[in-house]
Image (cartoon, rainbow, N blue to C red; front, side):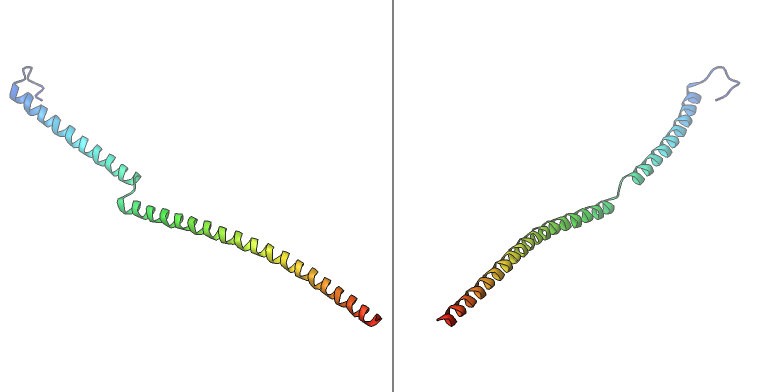
Amino acid sequence: MHEDDEIVTRGILKKELKKELGKLRKEFKAELKGLFERLLDTFVTKIELQEIMKDVVRKSDWMVMMTKIDAILTEIAAMRQEHIFMSKQTNRMDDQLNNHEVRIAKLESAV
């Protein structure tokens, strides 16, 4: 503005206001650009989001697979316990059979 003039005309005021408005717009654009850049740094891009989703899918597939493996291992443990029980029972039956054979042999030799 003209400091020497006490009377400000409409044209001068309009010119000064436009100049100030231009400065404010530039400052606002600069601040908005800075904010936008900070937001971009903060949030993930679409490609990064897709990669994150792929990782989540891989991990969920891994969890499903681990659940299935856990079920299989439970079945194997049950089969192992059954095998141990059957082996012990077979050994007892073999012992009984041997005892019967020995008793039969004694009875036959006594007759």
